[in-house]
Length: 448
Image (cartoon, rainbow, N blue to C red; front, side):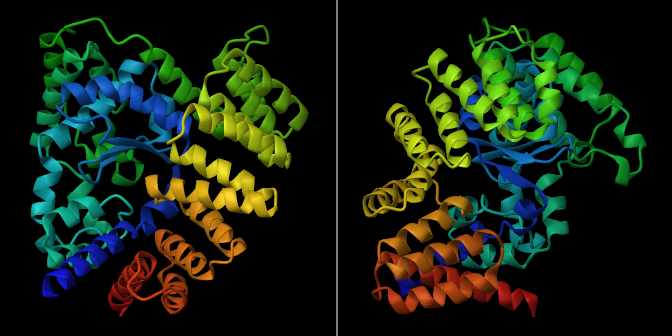
């Protein structure tokens, strides 16, 4: 029983840490898009393989932030700001960023920070992706220390790297690029963008210059690495395509839609251009042209799940729910385990507002949650699906977990308490509600 209590405490505290997305997710919204994440995974795959890291265990996530920055907070996730992706000129430059961050993971830099976590009192507010590293320590006191830290200290300890670590990551990153068939000169091109940043006041520096110290010596060393590590093989086919696909979709969704349309050549009917044009029309909004264009995209790429998913999104947000369900169903058929596509499909089914649609939506959304439980938007729709199917206890639990992910711990506590009273004591849902309550109590203690 004592062992079980210890495991429960560690799991609960780790869960609490995983919900502390307050600062990162409020100030810098995560851009969750299945197509962009897949494209970045394809770009990262040869780099991660060269680094000895599993491409299936390291996820590249995009933050909606114009600042030029990239960083890691654990050994399984690399964050890249949308502004940095949009600034890169080619696939090799973005792969250089990924290689550098992968080197921090492979060289154990973040692991050493977690080893010092108790004394550093890092981590409150770093968000969803710290839990695995903390739980792996098996040390509940260290995990509790994560909750007790301030965002300022966590940024200094977890985001910032020493010059020696930066030089080590540059050298290892250049080697990984060489082994992956990517020219390490691209790393020099990235560093050149930040040249002179250290001469500026802190308030005017890009975050990359503050978290990844730059210097003339480091830039000189990077040039040496680029000269020493020639690509050992031809680059993977398609990397430039995946880069253009990720950056193009970011530009279309973030940039001015009229500017996007002016930039695209009218005579160009390539799938990349059709995708960007469809998004731009959708954002204007011009539903008729958006649907016409995305239909052309699906016609050009009938076996591409992300083309069908985009069609589903455009139709859903144009309130054509029946057609959206059909489009998402095609996307799920082509990519049955993609949680973001499943979430969109469930949302469309729920919008039908029929008993059968509600039942199917719950099944689909539960599959989405099992594969990616850290989607606040999905959890909101999942709560509605539970309620429409008569399971108010699970509806309250999903709402509690959503509020916790958003950092609204007082609201999370209210709904977790309600879930605890409605769900059978000891079942998995009830246990998850207790984890939320423990996280809320830890947050309340920190506020006192």
